[in-house]
Image 1 (tube, rainbow, N blue to C red):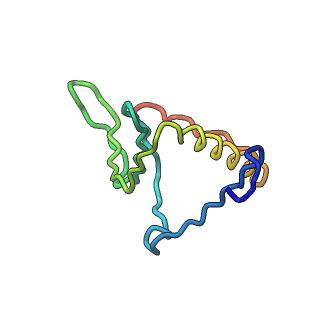
Image 2: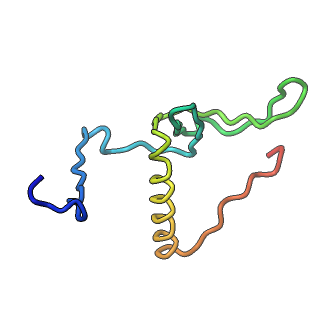
Length: 110
């Protein structure tokens, strides 16, 4: 160490770079979150066609055609940091834009 006390660690600063394609980002209509024993998976998807009522096993369901545009795999330890960051950004956004209510589920059959 450089004479630094263990009581005052040097703060970290992340210097991130990416390719222009990654930097541009992708649009997603929704995200599906699931997990395995050692990771969480976030699948970001876009609607490809309007929802349609179809019959599956004798029951009517709303089929929502979608295409996955990105899959992100994250260590479980990182999920807590992501949740904190999302909460902080949502609070800031609501302060700027005004509070909004989450959309409710559409009625069945629509």
